[in-house]
Image (tube, rainbow, N blue to C red):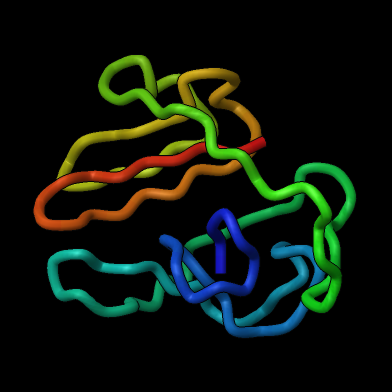
Length: 116
């Protein structure tokens, strides 16, 4: 699961195969389809590590992830890391070419969080 807490069932994309780096996973990636409210398979989706692998699933990080602010619109079209919700592109307000982004919707409101 790609989100602020690795392995937690809350995020935008996931791969059920076990591994440290996403580029080593051979199973299809899944993404959350807000319209159908279900996971959809995407055989073309790829992901890769930026640097060394993070902690394993049984390792706890002593410092919790502190989400950073997002922005949206045209500024995000030049970013490497972004997410799209209801046709609007969201990205990190600071350093949108690294880190990660998590988006969700609740009662029609878009929630967006970035982390590095």
